Image (cartoon, rainbow, N blue to C red; front, side, top):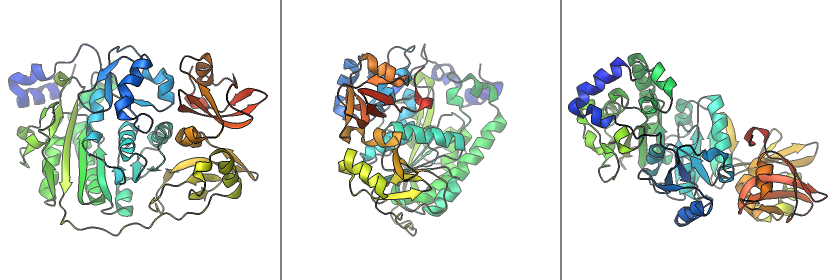
Length: 453
């Protein structure tokens, strides 16, 4: 049960609407968001049906589906391993879609772990432009890196930094910014009981203060004329309408974009921002009665006449080291001429236009191609996840092939379509990493931490 503080606050704000608004669906809804880097949006429904995945289009986001069977575990499906979809609570897919990201833009996800929303932004970029995905907590940053690798994202800079350091490095640089702020988690009470046990008024105040700082840094990163989404998974006024109202009072160069055209949720509530009034109905709330666990979203535009900043320099780059270049020429000829950097013993393939990151803590730049070990090149899992469909040598599996499950368990499998040497392993044409063929067998190189049990 929610705390007395939560009930008293919400009953005072909602009155007779309280019991209606906090009516949950019978089961916690599970959802998946299709990765357009793998599947064209118009083909998603047919693909899921052919794979036996029973879902209906989500009301919260194009390209997302609500699963009919709440007991089904999407993370165990081979298509999940192949980055075809991201498992995501349905309403959590809504904020990223509001940014209307277009191919070629520069996009920042400032609080990006675990990576569902960052994957959506990368999908919208369609491999063009730049995504900077940042996460302050090191453990969560590693999860973010792994998820973007699984989804085949090749044009991202993944950082483990403070928002303030990101803002200092990229002033007024991005066309789109997403701030899915750390929050008190009131929308996670049912899904994560620990969120309910830890909840308190002091936590709400603490999260509101942290959100204010992050929002300031995000605003500094946004270019004039750009769009920023601020979102939370809480219902607290101090973190939602009150946060946005106070921000707009401090920043007259920003204006709220009306979200009343949305077909889900309900308008934001002016009573939740009494100290900084604004047109709160332009924001959006998702209550439990709307079919999600809980979300708040505001879309803010930075006026075109707002001042800009100095653009960061492009990242320094060179041709790949000779052992890497020879490997790419043999197995991935489409990557010939790709710009690269060598960081320690790791080779990264860089997307065009990647900005220099200076002294920011780097998790990944572009695609980790592999490592130089005693003068030879050892390809990385990420190379095959990003470009596996372009590999000249491939072992092609089907969803119902017993070798698919064996491969994901980390077992060696027989080779039917791949010749000797390194190969991409594909399921229905989607990448499952790489292996090495010898004597008619594919030696398994699927990372241990990702394997099925």
